Length: 169
Image 1 (tube, rainbow, N blue to C red):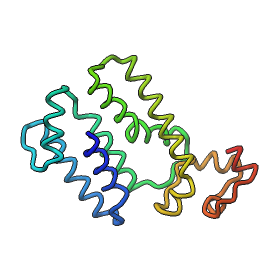
Image 2: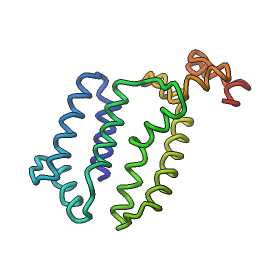
Image 3: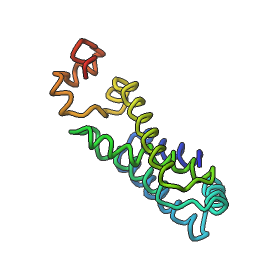
Image 4: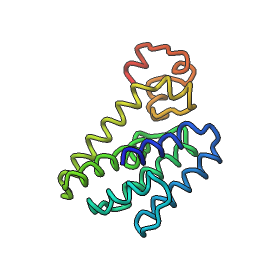
């Protein structure tokens, strides 16, 4: 599972060409789907297929992760906090659910708690990497409506200027 997540994330973040990254992610999606019909081709997916069978893991968490990585190729700004949280439901929450499946837990209560924890960790990661994300990937996970409300602009983020408005944001 880690190899799947790490490789897919790298395909989304490290390729450097949007169309090429989307093609790689599409191929990765196809290979993930093949795990569920017994037609795996590579070491990562052979191991993943065995883990899926052993722990009866549904495919949706894997597909959700890929959807988030594909979204990273198409969307680099978010207007509202709700849009950022929606992204987290696919970029972070599936990882927690996969851990629960590995541990043998399938109940909704644990899934909801895991989702909240994973979303919170993803948001903290975004806030930790605000400047790096804009400089290295031209992405901003701070909601634009909040940036306007607190009078913070992209130039300020790029320059690393952290004033009272930025701290309030």
